[in-house]
Image 1 (cartoon, rainbow over the protein chains, first blue to last red):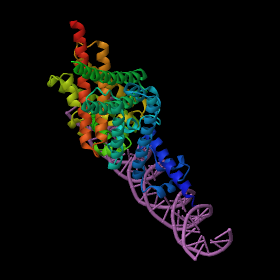
Image 2 (cartoon, rainbow over the protein chains, first blue to last red):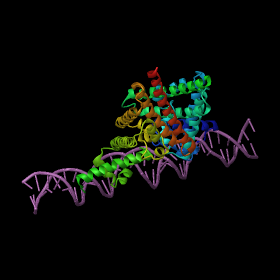
Image 3 (cartoon, rainbow over the protein chains, first blue to last red):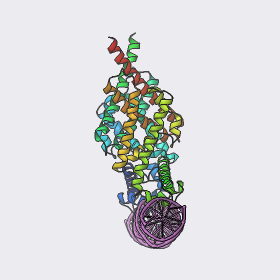
Image 4 (tube, chains in turn brown, red, orange, purple):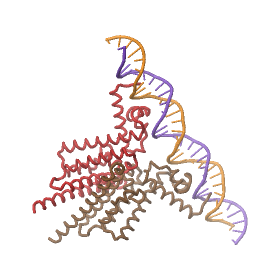
Length: 205
Length: 205
DNA sequence: TGTACATCAGTGAACGCGCGTTCACTGATGTAC
DNA sequence: TGTACATCAGTGAACGCGCGTTCACTGATGTAC
């Protein structure tokens, strides 16, 4: 039966939220539309009143998931007045790795995105760029702009790899999984420090 | 009908090779056992004479895929007498990114491994460690052992992230996809150079 | 070396199941008067 | 404000399809004599 416009909008949002959550946890191919609808408190038929296909739903779910995560990340950084190093520590923490739902959605789905359609790829790219932009602004301003951009881009990719790899080996070697996170923190913080120092020396000399 | 032991072994190997190839290209959930068997020139029933289940096949296919890729990588490094930097250039090349089949299998499946069973996770970990060991040996010996290990581990995770991210955004922003590979090359080569230089200064002073 | 037979890799039909999608139907909502 | 009716979000049965797995059967291979 028909529901109010507000309720319909809520249901649509609930479907997207459920899809985003389930896709991260079990992969796109690992979750059916019936389960997504059920998780949102609906039957599978209702889903097609809001989305033309699973693919369309997937694209929107990723877009929303990325945006939501980015917003949380930005809020956290503002609240804690986090600089580059602290932000890297947060992203590469065991807490982020162990939470498929609160953690980075790019890391949760990285290797699947390339097999999806253009819309999903575009969502990923947008999220990647926003993340890189955010990190870039946190870098020492003594580093030349071009280097800042390069380092920020590499840092996002590095974070994705470290979290994905750490998750992949968690079942068989938890100690090494933690070592991966720590090693990546060292690499990124070290690169930041070195590039900032180099510039200072140039300025000083 | 029965076939010779040699032919049976060949068929088994063909199934594993087909599975490894198809899983990388389309994901584990994206490929059925019938297609794998067909690609190996058999019917789906034959598959169960060699493997107890798709999961068992998956674990063996990944194990073989990782080992095969590692062997190729080692051979390439030996032939080209590649040092750390050249090896990084090879791994983070557009050629490796664009070939799902010749490229790094860890990057192709990173985010899916965590959802598979213990055996698949163990295969991934073994491949990761071997890759890290190989890179570690290519690092400047002036760098202290603990730093070498940390850098090698971070480099493998970084490579996985850069290749996976570059593939994910290839459809929507090829220029940025290339930039990711270049930025990661800079980050890793820079870290290598800096750590080697630091040590030299300490030794010199 | 030749014969008889057990072995077993491979075939292909069949299993139950869940997938994405469609559709006739329901009934409260939203709207026109 | 009250009434009549069109709208449409949501329901649930049904669709064809491909999934992973099983199994009776085939017939060449490998082995025992």
